[in-house]
Image 1: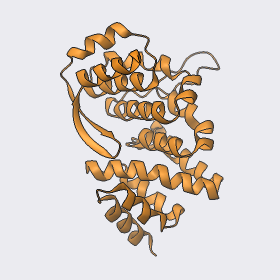
Image 2 (image 1 turned 120 degrees about the vertical axis):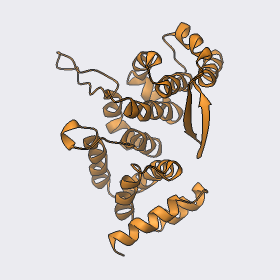
Image 3 (image 1 turned 90 degrees about the horizontal axis):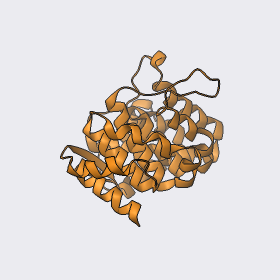
Image 4 (image 1 turned 45 degrees about the vertical axis):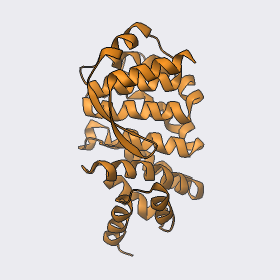
Length: 234
């Protein structure tokens, strides 16, 4: 099958509502061929299609890693490179896709999760300070969604890599989506270094779109802060 036909077949699958049907359809395709179409789709403007592509990238790269780990590492390096200024791209969807991959494959999570977290950290003068802080607020939204996803599926790994210390800075972001997703990630992680600010955000009426469990909804920062506080109290 030609690359163009595979791309169209993948797009048709991603347009469906049922994630189970999407996964079944993608499993019939060669993982190496499908993943190229999926990575292109995580940059699409169509909201549902883009998020389905993020989820499906996780499945597909994990399937690839089980058969050919080095090929999966090449995909990881490709996603990381897309966030590099020298790449000439912007890296839309890359943090989210990486988080989904980590949720689906423990080996890749162990190898690369520190790189995802580096995008929350500034570079420093010392040799061990290797941050790659993302300043673009839209990319930060993806990064904070990825942090929440990691907290859901790789909580202990995220904690061991210091993610709890990376989140508080985003509670004061001028971008409402970033504030809300940071609060959500804290609640899912079960750690908060700034309860006072989290309480303040319960009055924050800024709205954002949230993808969770295969569904997209509109929520407020206040709702996410309240949910986070409820989780932190349990």
